[in-house]
Image (cartoon, rainbow, N blue to C red):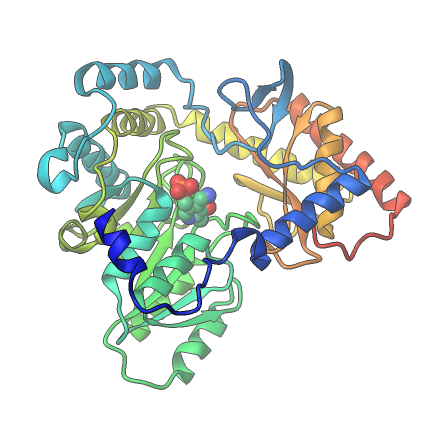
Amino acid sequence: RNRAARLSRQPQQPARQPLRFESLPEYQRVEAQRKIGEVIGVANPFYRSHDQAAGATTVMGGKTFVNFASYDYLGTNTDPKVIEQAKAAIDRFGISASASRLVAGERPVHKALEGALADVYGVEAAVCFVSGYLTNLAAISSLVGPQDLVVHDEFIHNSALAGIKQSGATRRFFRHNDVENLDTVLRTLEGDFRRVLVIVEGVYSMDGDIADLPALLELRNRHGFWLMVDEAHSLGVLGATGRGSFEHFGIDPREVDIWMGTLSKTTSSCGGYIAGSQALADILKADAGGFVYSVGLAPVLAAAATTGLEILRSEPERTERLHRNGALFLECAKEAGLDTGLSLGFSVVPIIVGDSLRAVQLSNELLEEGVNALPIIHPAVPEGMARLRFFITCDHTEDQIRHAVDVTARRLRTLEERNFGLGALDL
Ligand code: PMP
């Protein structure tokens, strides 16, 4: 209080109030969208609350829906083995790691998980972070800096973009999945960079297509860049036994410099990881701020993820079922005349509907048909490319898939016929 009194006696400058959050354009945009929704009677499709675990089906407000909005690709989230191991970890370790691993936060479950991840990839080591988002942010900004260059596919995830920005490296992008364009970008760049990093995704999260790893490796070996592959939507999904992009293409996983992934999808936990050489893991554990200065991954989450990886290894039929379901969804959608964009029908199938309002309306209408699928709208995708994104799991049944596609096609047709003329609204 004394300091406040002293400050108030300082020579007076004209008083300035802090900016009110309500005055920010960011807030006004949110408000405008809410009001438009109210006026035209379109409910907000986001933040729908689920009463319990959401897998191939979910319960909202006491009603059951077929669910295409959860990442639980292999149905491990409610698997009794995962629950049992998670409970055992809680009994032994409590909930939190209680400190950074560097100080008092290390638990045996961390080592077990990192060992299991390194095994999946057939590489020397892995290191875990408390979220997938943080993994990209912390790892990229630790490995490159202002003297370096990062070239990325134009569709990479926001978390990787955040990492590049944080790093201060020069950033360039190449056209989506266009390896020749990457070659051109690398050839035409001027400047003597200390390190060059190229970032792609295994399965692309908004489009469901996949990076051409063999072609990328060919370029890597010519240009000498580090190749980083985000396997968030590929682990458990690509390859005959779900080990990801390298298995799908039959390449040596040690050729990729940096494997990145998340624990929140196939392994139904929370957290992220980098896998690669021992030196890479050692650097990140010593240098990445998001590892050093953040709490260790909660032991319960590490135990759940490790059990998820065991299921991946011991029950490859889950990945087989996922492949069948993805292929069926894609085939039905194409037969129904729906625009599935670039999707190859693995874990992610978008149905592209055009403007954002239509995507929101369609998502809301599907609820009436017992189907939960969420819209992806501008700015997450370019305006005019709004879509419903369907996440496929191994537990969806053929009937559920056929029903979801049928009602999506029918409802979309009626929406297009009704044509509100509100297409330009940026909902
Ligand atoms: N990378 C990609 C490609 C993603 O799609 C996501 C999230 N969906 C992340 C990273 C971040 O992972 P997490 O949600 O586990 O933080």
